Image 1 (cartoon, helix red, strand yellow):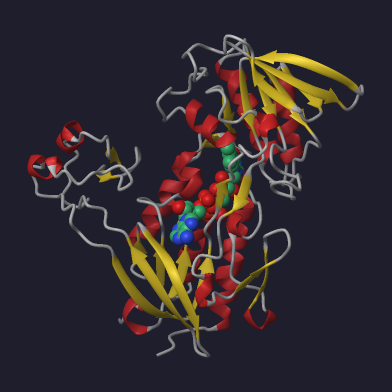
Image 2 (tube, protein in one colour):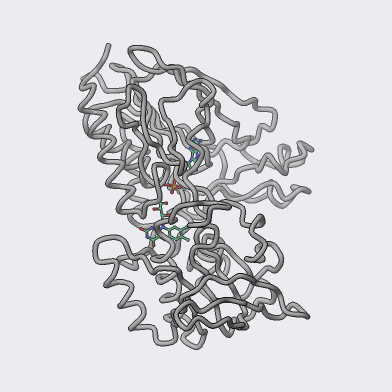
Length: 414
Ligand SMILES: Cc1cc2nc3c(=O)[nH]c(=O)nc-3n(C[C@H](O)[C@H](O)[C@H](O)COP(=O)(O)OP(=O)(O)OC[C@H]3O[C@@H](n4cnc5c(N)ncnc54)[C@H](O)[C@@H]3O)c2cc1C
């Protein structure tokens, strides 16, 4: 039997997070050949950086791993890591897509993970690709590598080639599904949040990774400044979101992950106080309101304050942080002292415009979300790259995009 790879033009899926993995698997199941283009060194996207996930409170990694293996093993899916779409030219029959692949420098099929390259690197450029990768391998961070070549001679299997050039190819594809997810937007332009002024002012993604069981602190709740347990933690909702100066919309998932993080802090370190400063507590999703209530009930010591701080500053000596805010329920201005602050809300869909100069088939509305595709049809953008979405919603949108696309052009085109 001729397999899909040989018999038809591919569909390109840009982004290998939960949305991209789902879209690729659904398209492949419908008999389409998929080229999955992922800019990172591994698949999984942001979910691979998370600790526990709501609403089930289970480990993020287990279900993700199953999908990654299914994608890697599927005969109708080809994965291109460290790759980006740099150009899109639309024709009547499909799209010419330019894909640029950065060299990894270390061939993961030869790497035996001995660590000699890392030990000898003077620039600290050699890093493990991902703690969950199987088999594990190292990669070289090109932003740090000075190309001194010390690692090359130390590798016992000849896996390192730092002169490997980038590769660019052009594929003719039936269409593209954009699943490029989200990015954290820099909060330093909003000085009231104090981001960058103190190590204990963190974004939610930094904090999630910092307290994750699979990361450096193995689930312990610690301050970044001194490695000690904080007495109390403030979660600041809508930091950067619903704010015309940065992101005018609701970031969609932040109330839920603040409730989740507070719950996990109380499970692991019940003595640590948690306060969530909110504008509206939005628990959008099936059973999410119940999850929120459960979180608050089972974790005595999580306080809710309605109000957005107008000033977060390190106190003299740098040992703690001062928060000035208006409590909009009591309408009083108040000042409180916290050991650690988590900023929630600075999440924006990733740049769908990569390659846009060459005319990719999307238009963005005033909020920055995908509004229309070519011919006024809905574009194939899904997951967080379409608009803020949790995992369940991202997966649903990805399946919907895949099914619509598979239905539009069914079967081999050649
Ligand atoms: C702190 C935090 C905690 C969260 N906790 C939960 C939770 O408990 N439960 C829940 O349901 N949701 C949670 N979320 C939301 C969840 O992370 C998102 O719903 C999910 O990551 C969306 O998946 P995605 O595939 O759309 O995007 P992403 O996970 O962002 O994946 C996008 C992928 O595309 C790649 N990419 C980006 N640009 C390009 C490009 N130009 N070319 C090729 N590839 C590209 C990226 O490298 C990435 O691999 C949380 C979010 C945060 C910030």
